[in-house]
Each structure stands twice: as structure tokens, then as C-alpha cells.
Length: 320
Image (cartoon, rainbow, N blue to C red; front, side, top):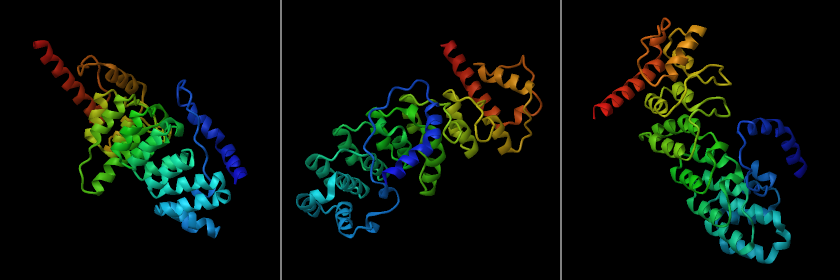
């Protein structure tokens, strides 16, 4: 199992180096969490092949604390450190906070990466608080947990991670939030409460123009999803529509034109106009003649709307 894990690490080395290059001089990560058993990534306790150990793992997953205590007391040599660690992971998989607490506080098992991932996926605030109490730091799992919390739509878990030092540079939460949260809440017939989440992430230093690992920015994702209110909010907060995504090789203006079936040909004249338009603080661009069809682009219209509102707000402030 260890050899297979080492081979997998070797295969992922190039991708890991590429991902690490996305960050400008990041602070060193805290020490990584202990690695869990390979079988946990591929099967569940009820399918575990060694029958007598299967009973132990099921007791952990189902929260039968007395049975777990008996196993540890009578067969600790059989379980060995790895079996105890797997027991912790399986208990976290089942959101069994009493069993998890027993392993950490009485048996002395350290927190693992798998355990905190299960807590995140299950949105278990009790387990998170327990792990943090016993020394877990969110950056020990890079930005993975913050991404998972966003995908699982857990405001409380996201807030907890950020409050305890989760570094948003190691994650790409904005594009992920826009991509997943709206669709999930609409499927439940609920309103999309995206604004407080995005505002919270920005307040903790999320880069509004950061590209996700799939190549998209928050703005390009919102344009692709047709999220007009989100687009307006992002532009108000400094989102740049000229950033080209690595997957589509298009910027947000081109994506908006494609969605609206507006002809959009990238020329030097168009680039010069967009540079002037995007970098100007004012909606007044009378000195520049717009290339044909530019004013039909929905993103150009939205940018003009935002700049006009800003001009009007500035004028009212000056009159006061």
C-alpha cells in the first residue's frame, strides 16, 4: 500500500509543482497531517476484507462507543497504530463525535487528513471544533477543505475555517461558490444567498481575479452561468473581464458575447478600447469611438451600468 501511495505521489509531482507555482511566495504550510490507509479511498467499512477488523470499523462508524472501547482495551496490539488511526477516520466518516473524541483524548490518536475531510463533507461543526481544539490548523490540508466546504454549501464550516487561519490563497473559493451554490439552492427551491459568502471570502483576502484550477475566474464563471447580479457585484469589487482563461482561451467579454450571440472579433482596436474602458474610473469615454458592435456585448453594458452608478454617486457626494 505504501509503495502504491509513493508511486501516486510521483505521478502527481508535476501537477503539484504547477499548482504551487500559482502562488506568489506563499508562507510555508504547517506540518502535513498523517496519511490514512489506502483502503479508505476505495471502499467502505462494510466491505473491508478482513472480517474481524470489519467488526471494529463498523462499531466505529456506527458510534458504538462501548464496543470500540472493548476492542481497544483487549486487542490494541492487533489493531496497531494504523488500525487505531483508521478507526478515527471511520468514526469521522460516520460523524460519531463521541468515538472521535475517545480516540483523540483517551487513546492518543492524532488528527488525520481523512478525518477532517469527512468532517467537512458531513458539515460536522462539532468535529471541526474538536480537531481545532487539539491542534489542527486548516492549512495543514492546503486549500482543500475550504474548497470542499464551499461545494457543500456550509457557511458555518467556511466561517470556522477562515476564523482559524485558512489561507484563501491556497484555494479558489469564489469561482467554486458561483459554480455550485446557486444551482444547489435553486434545486431546493431556495434563494441564493451568495452575497454574504462572497463578502466574507473577500474580507479574508480572496483575490477576486484569481483563476481556478480549471482556468476560470469568478467573473468568467458568473458570465458563463448568466448570473447578472453576481456579475454586477464582482465588477463593483474590481473584477477584470479581460483575464483570459487557460481552458477556453477567451476572456469574460468574449464569453458574454458568445452567450448573447453577438459577433466579437478580437482586434488591436478592440483591445485598446477595452483597456481604456476598463481602466477608466468614469463612464464617460466620449473621446473614444467604440468599435462596431461593442455596445451590444452584455458585459460591456454591465460595466457601463456600474461606472454610471459610480459617477452618479460621486456627483451626489460632490453636491453635498
